[in-house]
Image (cartoon, rainbow, N blue to C red; front, side, top):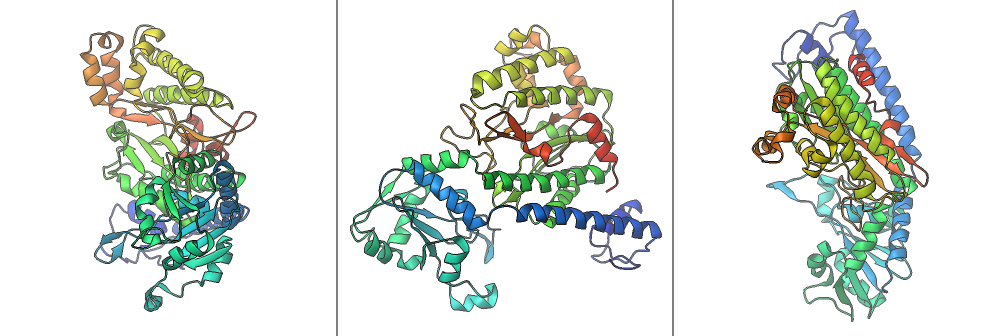
Length: 507
């Protein structure tokens, strides 16, 4: 640490600026440093170092990238029966503007099969032998000045466990000489780009290309059932993301902007080695929480408001997906507690139903919705009977989204049934994210609907409207017996008492 005049960057002096109620007027401003500042800084650095060491130890225990990808390929090939060559292409860099590129994030299917996080690669896999050939872009030697020395083909093969490695420009010749007469199978999104690999005149050497829905199904089915290494990646992403969420709670003060809270989340996840979030972070204070995918994150945070945060970081493309709602003041009001407790009760009941073999619609969604309707009655938001509310979809006015979805390398992950399960299986990771929102666009038409208006208590709804909305989201691993809450296991608290205690903890 710097001894006595801490510069107005990095984060430790941001606290000092806030205490002085001033914004930095220059990038570097020298501020007086008190003994209290030094003690806080030492404490912060010590805690950060300890947390970072713990997280790094967790990451070090995860199987290597090439071991994980090799297991993925075995699972896909066990489900894909046609003989031939599977060709999958990774993403290329895309321009942001001029010669500035967008931050690169690999295609999820390609990352699943290869582990490669570099742009411009492809691969070929013999569906019968499993022989894995990595196809690398051939870069202009002059780019070494700008990009540094590039690994050789031999180095790439060793790093990613490939049986062979060649340049993409040699793909046509390579396939024709080694796989003459075989079919090439591609994922649907790769079919239009296959000509770039096979030359201007199409596939040569007797090869035939085919878009394969069977291949897509095999990859989706494999990705839906997480390996032990996949679960370990999700655990690590959850652990770092949980720390980032709670750091926001501890640093939140009325008068901040939502983006300042988002910045704290990014600071912690970046410090934990996770450079990508799985989706744009939602940091919604007050009424903004009534917009389900709010991502402007530029409003001021009011002292009596709730803040809904939906944010998760990625590790090896596997993303956490965590939502929490917390009070800016550090303490829920009685009305806020009532709403929060209802959402938490629905979530805990739903998680208890996340069991192997359960049908999603009838055995998970239906009883969860029935409980939700009962709680709407208990809160006074609705009137009538549970059956009447259920049959008229009154609960969907307050929760317009689903209860959960598959989670993995995509935040809405793939499976043969799409992003939502039909029947829960061991190895599935599914979110559980009930919410309660006051969305004018949903409620106003219902007040005029002949059947629905008599089931709603508008005066009570209006009293809760300023809160915007509440969501609580955990990531659940389905096991052969029961389930495992990855989010709670990462230390992410959610009871009212625990959230309030975490808000008041010194950061």
